[in-house]
Length: 276
Image (cartoon, rainbow, N blue to C red; front, side):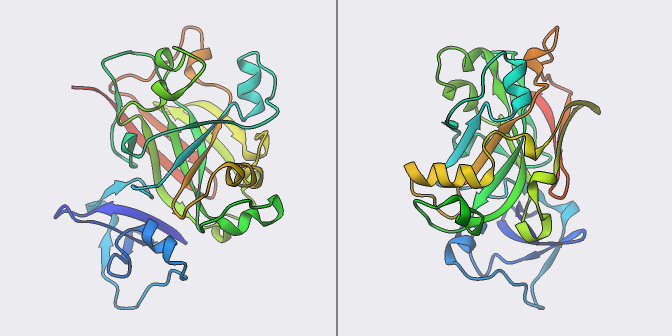
């Protein structure tokens, strides 16, 4: 099942189940996709549900209003090695704020404060049940689905200190979507490939099994230090090939288009624009 959040032509926000080139609008059953997950009931599509054409909708982040966005840094061996580091003993955790996200097709904004705007193609997963102290063996039972993420980074600000927060929370720098795809549709996520393209040129490629800390381990670890809520987003880290390590650096700039594709999950596409 593919789930999405959207804004229709009248400016009304909603969510629903994707059916080909349409979406079955389920907003009447729950105000948001996050609320639908929190209700704990199976998501079903009534025959009478209104169908809307995808072409007439604005894509919102699949979860526009998460309680938490938990980001994992230094989690692909290829990215760790290109930076000359050693694999961490424990996940490297930082956070992103919900108001820094944009949906599929929406511009990612290069800010006035710095031109060092880097791409980071990533796998995101969303929590489906409130949980704490989840074992790795039980972890997949609380995963509602997978999506694509571009965890855009302002490298100059990220490197102001050992804390990544300033470089990861500039408005409109995190792209999320286009859909939330349920695990039964994806299958074994470790077999999926992650590819990032800048203006059609491949700049990152890995398989998800290159993660140092996989989905189950991250659920177990994160649920050990916080209560995970339905709709919480966990962004699992990027692979090698980020723009900062190109010579010269390959920063995103206005007029560029960046794509993050995960096999079985979808392709997230965003143009790049300057802050006005």
